[in-house]
Image 1 (cartoon, rainbow, N blue to C red):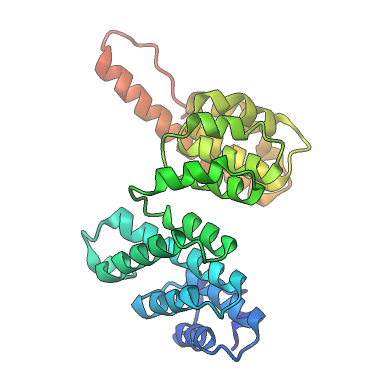
Image 2: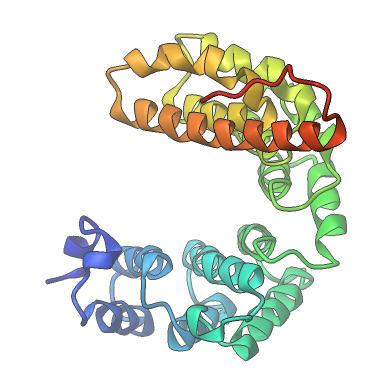
Length: 283
C-alpha cells in the first residue's frame, strides 16, 4: 500500500502502518515534492494524529528551504487539531489528538512566524487561516489588517477567517458585493456561521437560482438553516428532487439543523410568553 491508495480510503479504514508511512514521507526531503504534498494533506485527515505528527509538520513549516506551498499546507494541516483542542479545552486530554504543551507550542510558533515579515506571504496567509481555528487575542487585528489589504488573496484569507472570529458582520456583508467568486463563497459561509440575517437575500437567491455552482449552493444550503431556520424548509424542500446526492444529503442535514434551531427558538418563546400558543416547528 502507498499514499496514493490511502487517498481513496476513508481515514477510519486506514491500516495501522498508515501513520508511519505519512511520517516517513514528510521527514524525507529527498522524496518528490508532490508526494510530500499529498502526505501533508493526508496528515490532517489522520485519525491517529499525535504530537509526533504535529512536530513534523511544524518542522516543515519553519524550514526556509522547504517549498512555500508545502510550508503553507503544513500550517493548514495543523488547524483541525488546534480546533479540536480548543473546543475540548483539555477537559478530557485523552480524547484530544495533541497534548496541551504541543497545543501551546503550535500557537506560539504560528504567532511568531506570522509576525515575521521575512516569512513568505503565502505561508503567513496559511498560518492565519489555520491559527484562527483556536482564536486568540491577536486575531481580530490581524484579520482586520488582512481585509484592508489591496491584495485579493489577503482579502480572501480575511473573509475565510471571519467564520471563526466574531465582530465582522459589516465586512462579511460588504464582501458579498466584492464581485470575487471565492470571496463571495467565504462570505456566505461566514454569514451562516454567525447567523447574519441581512445576508438572507443572498442565501435565498443562490438557492433559488438554477445556475448556482454546486460548492456555492452547498454553502448556501447550510447557511439557510443557520440564518432563518423557520423559513429554511420553504426554499430547501424543492431541492430534494435533485439528481445530485450531495445536494440532497446537504438539504436533509440542513433541514434537521433548522428543525433543531427552530424548536430551540420555540422553547425560548414559550419561556418568555406562556400565553402565546402560536408556535410553529419544522417537524
